[in-house]
Amino acid sequence: MARAESRAQRAVRLINLLTHTGDYAGEPFHLRPWEKRILLALFKTGRNGLRIYRTALLMLPRKNGKTEIAAAIAIYCLLFDGQLGGEIYLAAADREQAGKVYGAIVAMLRADPELLAQVEIVESQKRIVHPASGSFIKAISAEAYSKHGFNASVVIYDELHAAPNRDLWDVLATSQGARVEPLLIAISTAGYDRHSILYELYAHAKRVEAEPALDPTFLPILFEAPHDADWRDETVWKAANPALGDFRSIEEMRIMATRAAEIPAQENTFRRLYLNQWTEQASRWLSLDTWDACRGEVPPRAGREWYVGMDLSSTTDLTALVGISPDPDGTSYAVRALAFVPQARLRERVTRDRAPYDEWQRRGQLIVTPGNVVDYERVRVELQQWDAESAGIREIAFDPWNATDLVQRLKDADGFTCIPIRQGFAALSAPTKALEQAILSKTIRHDGDPVLRWCVGNVAIESDATGNIKPSKRVSTERIDSVVALVMALDRVQRNAVPPPKPTYHVYVFGGSQ
Figure (cartoon, rainbow, N blue to C red):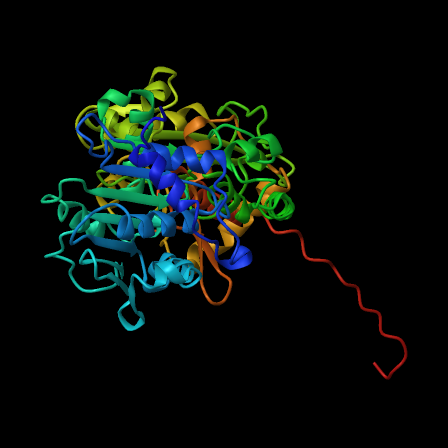
C-alpha cells in the first residue's frame, strides 16, 4: 500500500509543474535535489499537521535562482496551501526590488493557462487575487506608507540586506500573530552592515544551525563559503553555489573573480554576492594581503623622532595613537600603534563588533582603562612615555572634536606641539592618497599590530566630485580609528619633510655692451 503524500511532498510535486522565466522561460522547473531539500524542509509538518517552521532565512549567492524559488513558493501558498483569506506579501527595500518576485510570479502564471484562469492580476497595484479562497499576493516596499493593519499569512522579504531599517520587517512579522500557520521568509545574499536586521537573523541562524533546539520554529538555509576560505578557490565557489556548473555560469564567476583580484575595491562585492561571505564594508579600500606584505621589523622607539596621530573616542569608538617615524633615507616609514577601550564596554565590543578585544587585551595589544569611557589621562601617560623613550614626539596631530581638554593639558603641562586636523576632504585627501601609495609601494613598515590591521580591513572610502578621498566612519560599519590616526600622522610627516634643495643655476652672458 502506497504511503500518503505529505504536504511537503505535495508542495514539491506542484511546484515542479511550474515553468521558468527569464532565460529559461517556458521550460519546466525540474527541481534539482538541493531545491527539493529546501522545499521539503520549508513545508515539513509536525504531528498536528501544521508546518513546523514559522520563520526561515534562505541565503543564496547571486544567480542561483532565488527569485524563481521565491515566486514558486508564493504561487503554491496562494493556490494550493488551503489557506482562506490569505495575505501574501512580497516585501523589499524599494519598489523595483519588490517588483522582481512579483514579475516572476506573473510570468509563471501567464505561462500556464490553467493557473491563469484561477487568478485576477491587477498590474496597477502589483496585486494577484485568488477569488476562490479570498487570498491575494501583493508587492510592497519599505518606501511605501505605514503597513500597520495587515494580517499577513505569508511574507517573502527579498534581498533583506538592502533594507534601510528594520521597520517593514517588524511590522510584517508582528502582523502574523492571528494566523494559525504563518510563514515569514527572508531571502538574501550576505551584507556588510552588522547592525542590520539581516545580520541579526543570520547570527540567530548560525546559532540554530549549531543547536536546533534553541528555536525549533526557525529554519536556517545557508549556502555560504567559510569566512576564512580562499575566495579565489573554485572548490570554495562550488560549496557556496549549488547551481554552479548547472544553470549558474562558472565562466561568469571566473571573469568576476579575476576582476576582483585586480581591483581591490571589487573584492568585497565578489565575496558578498558570489560567495555569501559577510564583509566589513561595501567595498574594500585595500586588500589585507597588501597591508600584510608591509609587515617587517619595526625599530624600537629609542633614537627615532615620531609624529603621532591621535583619534579620541566617543563612547563607542576606539581611541587610537599611531606613530610614524621616517627612516634616515626619508623614503620609507616605520609605524607603531596603540589602542584603548574602556573596561565596562569590553564584553559588549566582543559581542557587537565580533572582534577579539578580550584576546588582544590578554596579549597586551589593547589597553583597557577602568570605567565606561576611555581614561584620557592614561592616553596622556602613554604619550609622555613614548616621548621619553624616543628622540621625541615632534608633533601630535588630532581630530579637534572632543579633544579640547586633553590637548590643552598636552600643550600646557607637557609641552607637546599639537596640530588640529579637520576631518574633511580638504585636509585628509592628500595623506589618504599618500598612505595608499605607501602601502602599495611597501614604503611603510608595521609590526602586524592586530587592532590596526582590523581597522585597515574595515575602511571604506568616501570621495567627492573632484576626486578627493578620505576614510569614512559614516560609510564604514566597523571601527577605523587607528587608520584615521595613521592618516593624520602621515600628513604631519609629509608637511615637515625637508624639501630637496633647489637647483643652482649659473648664468653666463656673452657679448653685449655690459
